[in-house]
Length: 286
Image (cartoon, rainbow, N blue to C red; front, side):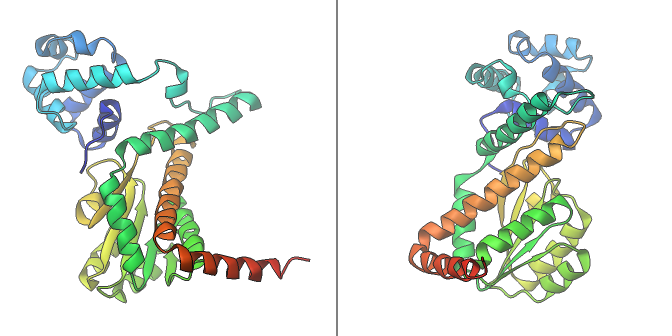
């Protein structure tokens, strides 16, 4: 997995798979971001009530060679960020005014896209675009909110005459995956990367020989480990629906990137197909 330059994002996403002691260090660091770079490894261990060995393990869990590497990365990240509310996610609160809700939800969505850009691997995007361009068939798999992203992807790629389908329930997913061929592509959309239905379908798709792509959170999930190509998103860990909304926006943005990448490569045919489908739809308007 290509590492983000933003150590704060790496820390936030790595917490999902950290040990309890590592999480204790992570929570202290998150609460004292500006103070940590000036601390020695011994001082951080004392402040977080852990051990120096735990600090080193924590640093390695976020992709750093050691504490010095982590402290330098944190200083660099803090230096490149504007220390104001524009760079922070804000959850919905009881009694928020409509003006506040409009501002916070819009800012959260923008921040999800910006954070996703910091973890998105260009080489993986290129591989995904190439695979979709060459695919005989493209299947999109997702459940819940991720299923809505699948349907959006289907609508886009269907309009440029790609043989594709969106599957949002476990039975149809397993059936479709069993019928995949080696020249097909299966795209799995899951924020957590650990959804049982998606992992079961992935196993069948791999057995069928299809190329597999994941759009998933920036973390060490089973889905990210098992697919051929990983397109990461980054979303906040907040308590209300803002997190789910942010992940959906980030995923939709990845779908738009893939669609635009394919459209750029196959521009002549895409332009023709979009024109034909546009004319067909316009003919229904009165």
